[in-house]
Length: 252
Ligand code: 13P
Image (cartoon, rainbow, N blue to C red; front, top):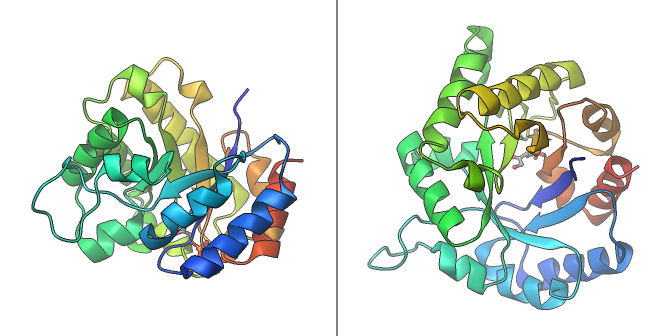
């Protein structure tokens, strides 16, 4: 039985007081183990303060990015060990905004995956096609390439620690959610790729979450799909009531 994940990616939003207030509310609202794992990904500046609030709770903290080197002269970068130190259990790797706006390549993401796993972080590895790629019929090819590049030489033991997030680029921040059937089609393909191309025998246990304009209205029909094991929420995860609704709906 897969334990689904509902994660809020706050991107470049929220001051420390705002992040702390949200975390306190979340901890109060969800004090008991539920049927979903709750994860929030604050900006780096708020990680430590959020950890202080959530350390004795069931809610997990994720970073939004990291560098692959352990330490050194990399101005502006943050290592996996620093994230562990700040209280992170998860790290988002390969978000389409990192790929498109900051030039992150499959090779760089693979180095990040190795470094995250070595430090004991659980990567939430993001993949997804652009609108042009979808319209030219290249979706599956792109998804397969992203998985093979990102997970190159990752051992089965480590694949077990990885959650995948399918985030079609055309659905991010656009209000245009993939239909449950569109998303399920790709999620099924992702699971097959993990089993066949990565030769991972336990792909049926891998958590594959959907992201792209998820809101309380779309959550139920998405998580009802057999291969959709939760959501990576952007905009609706900034608002406490929306995020709490999404958690409740996914945990029904
Ligand atoms: P939106 O939910 O705002 O579309 O963002 C999705 C996303 O990028 C989460 O990582």
